[in-house]
Image (cartoon, rainbow, N blue to C red):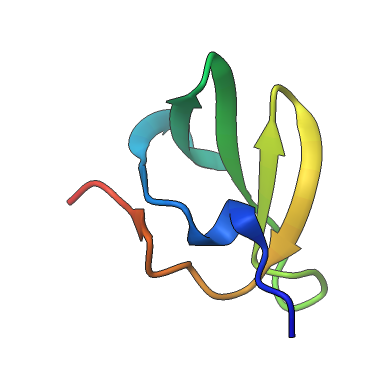
Length: 68
């Protein structure tokens, strides 16, 4: 099984003010955003980079650090 490089790099997320998009990070001059989806009808999360959907996933990657 191939590992997705987006999910394995260490990212320190910050809180955003939008409950649908609760986390964001600035990575290499790009805005990375996490969207919360309509679970269980869809996968729980979507990663968007500069407003483009990159991937959907259910389990938060261990390398990604959410704010406390």
